[in-house]
Length: 385
Image (cartoon, rainbow, N blue to C red; front, side, top):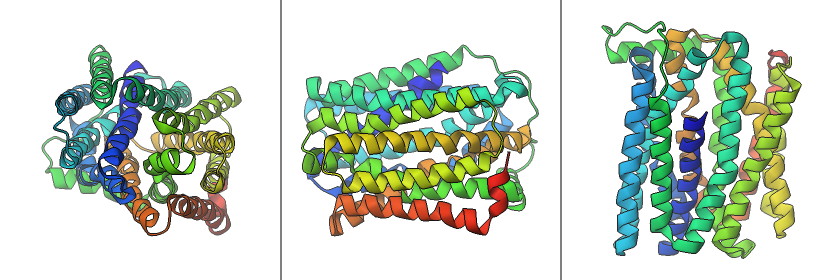
């Protein structure tokens, strides 16, 4: 859990730091979305390969190598900011590098979880993993905002690099037990398409992947536009930007605690759909708000609703996938990290054409309507346990 916490702290910090520096350099909503979208290219093209390698080789070593790459990238950015040579293209290149590292790290990290805990404790492990993500979503942006306000972007990237270093070191202390692996003699393409065929031909897996990935494309990218809300809509500066980004994480922590208290509940599918709809509606409220308190409350509830459907989806994917295919299935699930930047590009363009509030309201409304559509057209989904 320490490795997951450190890693996700760094990821959420990076979104705030990179976005703030980019907006200060350009003042463009489209560029904010474009830099976030730069991470989508390696995530979309390399994530499936990362899943193949996670099914073939040592998942622990794969994570460590990816974190080493992140540390090097953060140190380069820190130097460029401190020296005054930072340019927009530096942010694009290092965003691509960060996306590539994440492509190989995340499938290995997610597929490692069921290998470290007994099957009966898997829901608790998934909840703890989600809790680490929620805590980092709350603390990461706050830490980034404070460091940005006090010492600037160079120091912020040094702190981020330290987070990646701690994550790699904690994973190095783990020992992965022997597990079933895919055949290393098979061609990479054959192994990769085997995982895709399993996902496409297994209805429950396919639907779980769909309800996970689509909201990440059309609604979750609102995070990329938060600097505009902080600067122009609410006028609260970098510290307030951290508060906005953290509000979702605080809500998610509460959601995770509530779910852990409820235990291994039945009808997880119903929880997924309710969470999707509530998340989308809260984004609409946030987009229409001009009051800081209302904005924070809307993002808090959005985080709580998000926790209500992400953890059950992960649990159902783990329990319905054999170990030798888990890396590849989870790599498809983790394409949401690529879909979110692509969605950020779309919302960034809408933000430039119309406004940031209009773009976020659009994404939230589509997400809520998607939940209604699945509930009506696929009633069996709500009975998934």
